[in-house]
Image (cartoon, rainbow, N blue to C red; front, side, top):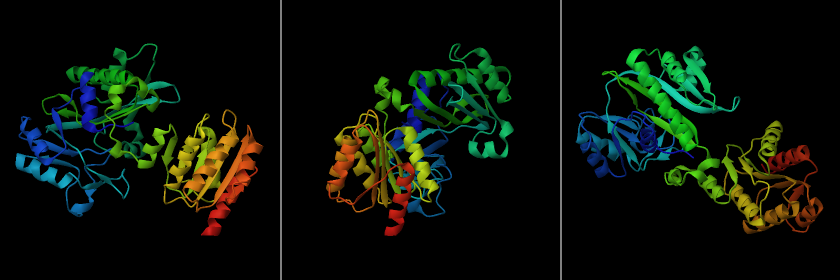
Length: 399
């Protein structure tokens, strides 16, 4: 689960991170009032969407010459003008895709006299099973571009969970940023605060870009992107309250209500599989046969008929889907339950795209019998390779 920048900063401030003053605004008048609470004379008006590249983005409704989603303002009137431009309009950035995202919230914060910009992030290093720091002097830039062009400017190290964050970790961050003296102490303090926040919230990512050095030699968190481990959110009811469902894909949101692992992709063959590994293999073999998966969907090991029906309907809600491949290995899951769900959903939505089903495992014959007796144009497959070939052929035949 991701949260907005203003929420992330409020959260990090509770753990001791240095964050400039700022206020959220949901209307133009609230934006102007927020500026009135700040010392000024420089304000920053930031569109709040779950996507990066806001400053370089463009609003669909404002034309190509309009400014992006992060603007400087030197007066209350300029704050009002920026807020009027942003609220209710669609911001397109490099991360939103062509559809963009509608801006419903703003963050009005104090301007800062920036001397230097740094990059500082914490992630879970899957290779070591530890929390890792990613540090660079190239703040304010896309870290992917830095990694591609000047990888030597990115420094990483992991923290042993047995010891936690230690003074030498703080010194490593400061050294990577070429900071000494009091600034090195500030860098260590910021790193320690972020590590405490990472563990304290079960975060999956904390990204500060930029971590700014101001003209008066203070480090400030000027932008923050924070995401949490969804599997741990049951322990953080307060964080769940920060969720903005308008920022989520409607199909993914619907899937979460049924405890389905669903991610929309750009292909045209819908997939329903049980088990993440099997789902990945299914997507790979679709691509191997010349087409692309429209989604990742794992119904899990203990799905009910209702859950399977919901999964099927979610796949079909995607207008890009031209065919569906169901690949089920019935271990804990029973193939007859899967078959009942498929038949019920197909009848309810008036199935109009090709459907190939591969069942194997518990009650497989009962499942196949249910599909055969349904009267629906369902194509059975013997194995995964056969299933992929059949769904690709069916979709191509339909055109």
